[in-house]
Image (cartoon, rainbow, N blue to C red; front, side, top):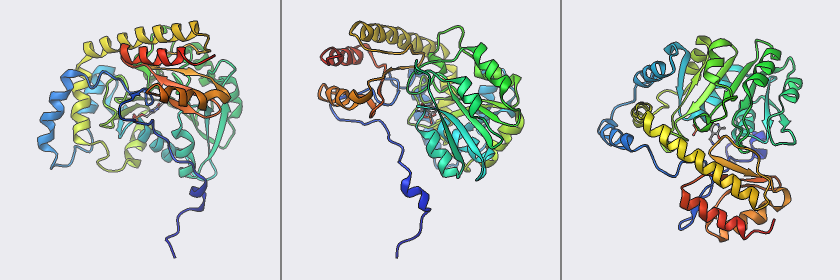
Amino acid sequence: MSARTRPDLDQLPPYVAGRTVPGSIKLASNEVSAGPLPSVVDTITRAATDVHRYPDMGATKLVDALSKQLEVDSERIAVGCGSVALCEQLVQATCGESDEVVFPWRSFEAYPIITQVAGAGQVRVPLSEGHALDLDAMAAAITPATRLVFVCTPNNPTGTTLHRAELERFLDSVPSDVLVVLDEAYREFVNDPQAPDGVGIALERDNVVSLRTFSKAYGLAGLRAGYAVASPKVAEALRKVCIPFSVNALAQEAAVAALEARTELEERCANVIAERTRVRDELLTQGHDVPDTQANFVWLPLGERTQEFNEHCTEHRVIVRAFPGDGARVTIGSPEENDAFLAATKAFPV
Ligand code: PMP
């Protein structure tokens, strides 16, 4: 007889990571292709000599550095093993079995998994026609059972961002005992002046959390570090439900160094934004439908042709992230990588 696991897990689809294919260009996981910020690599090497010690559980240096840079009290900051771990901790901190989590769909693939594993109910709210979050529908989906709402902006995988005014209107309508998580994993790539700043909103509203990560613009996906800015009470709850020592020592040191490399970061984001505009413009010229994007990726809503497009790109040695029946998400890479992708799409009949 084999050990018993929870029967509901048999039906749970696993998280699917972007594929890595040797010899092909990977544009499947929204990583930055430029690598870690140059000044951060030395710090990681130096920190390696201390890895026989447990990391600082309170990530004091990192929390202090974030507190200074964001101008936020350190008691409002919690760090996690990537922002995906913080998503999980937030659900754990708020939800029991008969509670519900509301989130847009399609959005970050981890939301339904985390919710189901926590034993909470999931309420998926379809995106609007324009592939953006439908905040009116999300507000209407909130019931007395709702404990948490994920608001992903810019939205993964469609890239669309909310505007501050519509978000504020939505937040005004949310009961104050429901936690709203602004998942801002791609915030550093945003250049729309009307986009919200989740950290500022989290400081003004006790039931709002801003989640950010060192995985994307900061180029530290392999080290796993993210942070939340929340009310002191929610930040404390996040620390309580955290697995001990979950943010490793190299990640802590690297994240501190990355925060100091502000000029390098800004330069990198400017390059990504310029390439994002070029790639989207070219795709539109080629006849593709591509929603306006504020992230480091574009979304091609190809519907039933998604799998065909995926195979076509793979044959052209470009690995994209396909969501069968829905669309393909393609990360903005280096100019050469983007050229290879655009050459592939040019050969795909629209
Ligand atoms: N939120 C969103 C919207 C994401 O796209 C991702 C990564 N794909 C994450 C959170 C998690 O990122 P990480 O755990 O690497 O910080």
